[in-house]
Every structure is written in C-alpha cells, then in structure tokens.
Image (cartoon, rainbow, N blue to C red; front, side):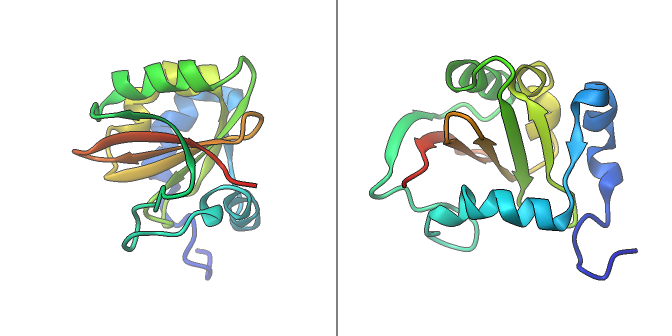
Length: 143
C-alpha cells in the first residue's frame, strides 16, 4: 500500500486498463502531478471540484452526461494518436493516459462510475471537465 494516498484502488479502473490493453498507462503520483500542473492547476475552482471557466476560451458546452456525449467531444477535440490524460475526482483511483481513439472507444467506462473527471489533451492543450448530471465543458488551457 502506498503512503501517498494515491492509487490505492487501481482495480476501480482495471476494466478500462484491460480493455485498452497496452495502449493504457496508469500514471504514478509524480506523473499525475506533473500533468495536473500544466492542465487542471491552470484553472481556479468554484468549489472543491468544479473549475472556474471565467477568462478561459470555452470551446464547447454540452448538457449530455454519458459515454456518447464524451465520445463525440473527444472526436471533435482530440487528434489521432493524441495522448489524453484522465484525472478522476478521487485520487484513490490512479490517473491514466490513453490515446484519444481509445478514450472515444471506451467512453462509457471513463464516465460510467464517476461523478467527475477531467480529460487533458496533451497536443491540443484542451481540457474537458465532466460533472455527472451537468454535462461537459471543453476549454483551451490558458498560457
């Protein structure tokens, strides 16, 4: 068991990792924090988890909050072969990195059992926020 409190329950994302096969990477805590530093941490929060989009270039909002909604957003904002880092609201579940096509193919598994998550598109510098029951917001990460 890790003492950092990070990634204690990798079995929660085991199905996604198994479905993605060798295309999936479970991130270490240091990798998670490095990717968060160039994506999530560039935004203020409105409460404990919701990002404050004021001042950001919002590309799209969607009231959908299921796998189909995520799949379509990933296809619109992700390039072929682009690495996407998925952060879940609960750090007890490790963050993972997948290619955009794999995220689109397994979108139901990404949002199926979580209340919130964020997807960072490493090439396009786009961040998608998912809040269960509220939908998705896609925005360009500020410089």
